Length: 287
Ligand code: NDP
Image 1: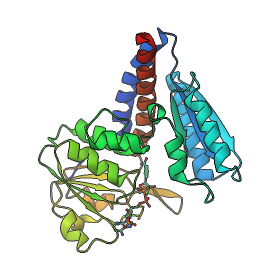
Image 2: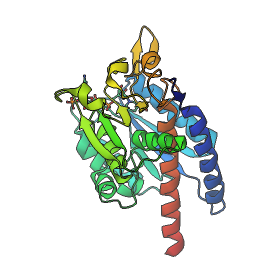
Image 3: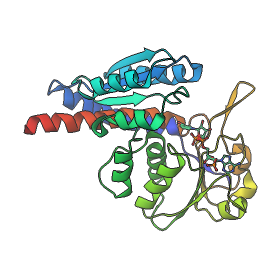
């Protein structure tokens, strides 16, 4: 069997055209969705990610405001800036590029973002809303993975999804999103015993660990859907956490790296920002 490739660029383009129509609609009310991106320090990878986000805003006709702060900025000063953005009418989404310097408490910073503008979906209120199946901003990467899975047309209900990795930004919300879709979900992580025996049971295998080509064909049940979230650099080449060449011979569907999950993350960020702008606009219309 050779797996069908799930092309993230194609799915992202479809979602971007939907976003574009929603932006046109908002502009009729004089609203241009606005995203503020805060970058603390000069980490080159973070700078690159921020530039992609700015470019995506520009391409979609959205407003973006990049705020670059020195890495010695005091936590209180950063939180005050976020407070100002919480009350800024031009800004509908606020994103703080992680990681932050060690002297800053990530949790306190994330919690200072208004849940109405939490387009990254990291705020505990948003996470709680997701868990209880209320309307919420879903974390962009797992939300993008959900869109990829839906694009294949496979039925999610009753499927056994195994999530390799349990970070707050990918693994945990991913499992919860699939639980909400009526999958049976198992999390595995670095302390899991017999990891391979568990991944071999997966109908849907999602891998987000940051370890190049860790998952080879021996971890995968024939016919499984395999989603590779990992981004690793080897000798200047980007590879995932899945050994693509091996696994594509046993899986039914597989995402490539690059070109799979990657293009979805920023697209879902744009979509969340538009959703935030729509909600705030609606609130204003009602008032
Ligand atoms: P983290 O480092 O925060 O978490 C990694 C998780 O993987 C942890 O839960 C860890 O377990 C687990 N893990 C690590 N090694 C193993 C192993 N050998 N076996 C089983 N579990 C293991 O990473 P992130 O979740 O932030 O990111 C994961 C990958 O996804 C990275 O490559 C990252 O670059 C990529 N990524 C891609 C995005 C995209 O847009 N495509 C967006 C975000 C991330 P434990 O908890 O026990 O330590």
